[in-house]
Structure formats: C-alpha cells, structure tokens
Length: 629
Image (cartoon, rainbow, N blue to C red; front, side, top):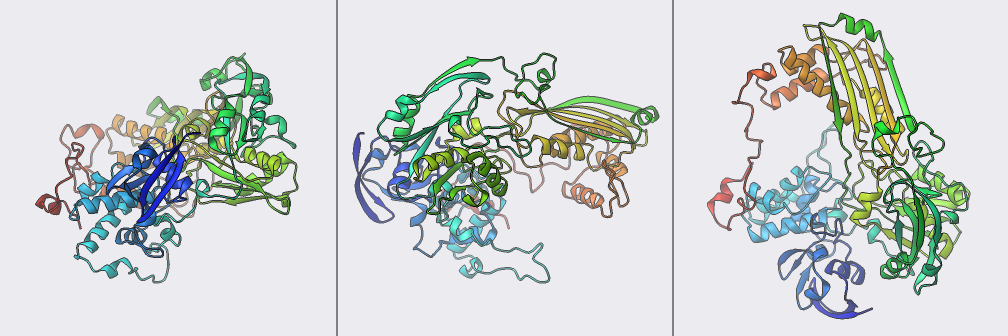
C-alpha cells in the first residue's frame, strides 16, 4: 500500500510520519493521531462534525486529502484549550445546555469559534449564517445560538467571565430549573468516546456485503477466495449462527444476515473481519453470491392483494399487525351528522439522520463473556436475543451502551451487533464495525410511510358525531417496531378530542422496502397529521375558527379516551390558550383573512435572506444592530 510522508503542526505539536496515501485528513487525525474529537457524520462535507482549523481557516476534514495538509498548521477541538480547561465558547455551550447527544458539538464549537474569530462583534443573524455549515439533529439550535452570544459578550468584555460559571438557584424542585448536564464538559471538549472512537489492542475491522436486490433467493455463497486473502481473519454468513437466528422488537423475524433469501436492498449477506478496512473491503469483492430474483412488493396496498408475493412464510397475508379500536355506534353517529367530510392523507418514509452513524465493537473477555459495545437504545432486549442467537447462557453475554450520538428510536434494532459478536467469537479478537452514512441510510429502519382514509361526521355546532379512521402502513421487509407503532397510532388516531362513536383500524404490512421501525411519536405523527388536517378542513367547511372547533371537541376532565379510559386530568384548554396567544392568532374562519395577515412577520419570525448576506465585516454597525437580548 502506497505511503506518503506528512509533516504537519497539530495543536502546537510537530508531527512527522508516514501514512496511507488514500487517507483523508479526518482519517489521519482519528486513526493515526487518535484525535477522535473530530467526528465523521456524513463523509461528504455536509454535516460539519469533522470541522478543524487548517492554517486558521475552518475546513471540513473529510474532504481534504491528507497529502494536501502536509506543511500546514492544524487545530482540532482538543487543541482549543489546555487539558482540563475550557474556552469561553465551550463553557457557554455547557452553561446553556447546548449539547444533547453531543456528537455534533465538537464541530459546532469549532464553527462557533471560527465565527467569533472572524468577527468578534457578530450579531445573532450573522452567527446563524456562519454556523450554517453545521448540522444538529437534537437541539433545534436555539441553545447553541444562545451559547455563542454569551461567549461573544464575555470575550468582548461586555459581560463578566463569571457568568459562565454561575447557575440559577434551584428552589423547591428541579422541574423547570436550568440544571447543567453532567456529561457536557466531555462533549464540548471532544473527550467523550463514542463507539467509532474506541480503540482496542489487536482490533479487527469489519465490512459488510449487502444485497443489490430487493427480493431474491440466495442460491449459493462462496467465501473461499475472501477467506484466503492476506489480512482476512474471518468471513461470516448466516450459516455460522450457532443458535436460534432471529431478532426483532415484537416478532423475531429478522436474521442477523440474510438466511435463504434477501428481502430488501442493502440487507447484510456476509461480513468480513480483517486487519484493516482496505483488506476487508477488498475481501468483500471476492465473495461470490448467486441470486435468483423474486417478484418484489413495493406498495403496501399491493401486499394485501390476493396472490401477492409472500415476504415471510409465517405471514401468508403479509400483515405484520392489525389493531382495531371500536367505541360507540359509528353508523348511528354518521346518521346523526349534519355534515360528513371524507378524505385521504399520506406520509412518506423518513430517515432519522442521527449525526452518529451506527458503530460498535465486540470482543470475548477473559471469562468467555461475549461483550458488545454499541449505541443501542434497547440493550437489555438485545442481550436476551443475542444469547439465543449465539447459543450462550445469558450470563455469558454482556451489552455495554456507548454514548448515543442521536437515536430518535432508530437505534432500537439489533441490525449489526450479532455480526460483530459472531466475528469476535470466531477470531477471539476485538472487532469493530463503523457504518458509512450510505450504509446507515440503506440498512437502518425508517419512519413508517402511511396512508389514511378518514371519514368524519359533524353537527353544524362543530361537535364531532363519528369518526372512521383506517391507516395502512408500510412496515418494510421486517417487523421491527411495527406492532408497537400500530398500537400507538390506533390509540392516538382521533387526537385529543372526545369522540363517542369511532371505528379505528391500523395495519402494517410487509413489503420489500427498507424496514420501518421506531421514530419519535411512534405512529402518533402520521395519525395526527390526518386528524389535525381534518379539523382544519372541518373548521373551513363550518365557517368556524380552528381554535374554536378544537375547544368544542377537546377532551376535558371526566372525558373518555378512544380506548375508554376516564381522564382525571386534562390540560388541552391551557395548551390551546397558550398557542393562540403565542402565535398572535387572528380570530376567524380560515377563509376570512385574505392576503393580509397581521399574525405573521413578528419579532420571532426570521425573514428570508440571500446566503451570506448577514455576514458582515468586523467593526461595522450592522452586526450591533442585529443583536438581540
């Protein structure tokens, strides 16, 4: 493998050493120098987690070849402050709670530092503009911007530095109080180790061969050439599973690698553990897989048609789960209605896009315990499932939850931990697998796409007399969390409104699309999109204010939910009051306002702008005008 000599100043220390010519600056910093505060989130220069200073300029290190960095001066997150200390920017991030999962935070701190170095007098709009190349999936950015403003005021001498160490007094309860996160210093300094940052002696690197087909029978897999290659420690397939192969949140329908057939593009078919990534990737190209393509299902409605291809033998009708909810007499409710509205709603597949791609390490400890370290959101369940898969007693299986760099439900599924465990058992060496962003997109679960048919009966007074709600969701190739999502969607289907007569059906079906799984709201978002849209349509049809129709039908103390639970508390009235006030709502039916709206363009509404228009030269008056209290 070709080498290149690198002479570079890193955080004030001269470094002179050879490295592989194909590496990026990001790889050199992380793998060669073990400066893992610089993260890889996308590998395409989009997310900003890999931001470093090169000769004083903020650079996405995933885009810079390492050879190009030779002769430069580099500053990483680890070099901003002395060990054990924090810069004003880092302290401000700690103070405001700007770090949540923390994976984006080193890059965000670098971008904030760059903004204040380039213009110490930057106003809030310029700060937003300058941080525009960095993505955060957790915070909503508000606390990040607040932190940069505080740091700007401290460094300019406008605010005493003591404000960075001061905390609000906690009185009777911590609820509602601003309490600092205990793990924030390790996140803002880049010291916290996520799974991809961890290193162990004699560790192997894993790469995964994935299916190019959505639905195909595996005729044969020949791994002999790959196994014979230099640097390859082992090649594993489903045939290497010693126990009962299958995992899932509700139904254990998913093998750790495709067994017998593949059910979606990107499904794992085989995996290689080798001395380094290059050897592992080369070995993947030597694995020969013969497929026999099968008819695929890509539309959930097609999955329910007679004679449709069967995705899983146990579910001949392709239904993962159907949840029915019945209350009152729906037919009587519609007969009583003065107005009946009926429509269809659909939502799309959504990627979680957590900044940390999936990663993990597995090893066998001196007591023959198989240990898996990964950002799993469900380690207890994973431990029990893995014990059955590898045929080990539960006391010989251990899961360690590494820091989770964003999950949102997307890391509840054990889609790679089993492969790591098998390779560690075969080699008795630590094995690490780090997904690329492309792998994460193609292999991880998504939000369930849904189609809702909605029928609502109403009186002229605005009271709902009956609802018929039918949701069909695409569960994808495996069950994952579909059952739970359908239960939550059914329970929340008709919203926080008291409906005496309803008929609800939520159904998830198997297709050959990427599996669907847990995502924030867990089915509630798809249902509420349909319900709240219907409420707005009803308000327009009845010439009624949208807030008014909601107040007429809202659940109150003593109301019965859709599943007939009696409510002892209810707060929707206060929520609606607060929302109406905060939005500066103009009362009236939706169609009365015309083109002019007095409730838009308020002080909390950011106006559109040309990219870069808010970046001004230091010392100009514009930046001071843009400041907000």
